[in-house]
Length: 158
Image 1 (tube, one colour):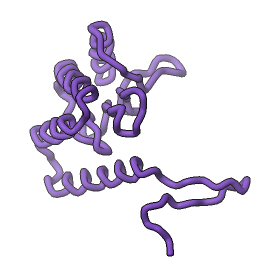
Image 2: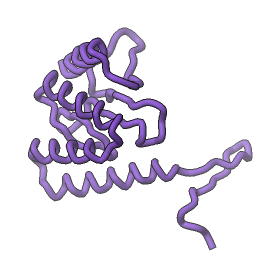
Image 3: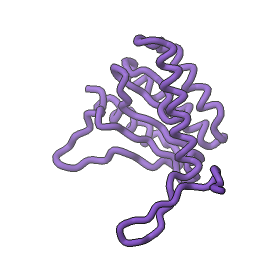
């Protein structure tokens, strides 16, 4: 009998065994499904306050080091781009324009990483030539980091 708790295994073309999704990845997908169901219940025009509440709840669940960074980023992003709507995205704080995520915060704890991540989607207007960064590793936030993030967020929504 198959154990439902174990990852699915598949065989690649080279005959190697590959694990399926990790527990953390499956949890993120389930969280996204819950977000979509909640959004459908709220209707086609979600209330910005609902998204803000959801984001603040997710931030409150984070370990202290990630929580402090997420709180600061939330304040910074909402001040730099007040037109962005806070919402959750795969269980992470995210900020969207017209329902499309522009940037998001992923705590280090989310996937047991050594750093948190501030990421930008393809909706962000950060294009510079043929190559530009779309994610930044964060271990702490200095005043210089905050200034750079504020400028990036402003540029992303132009």
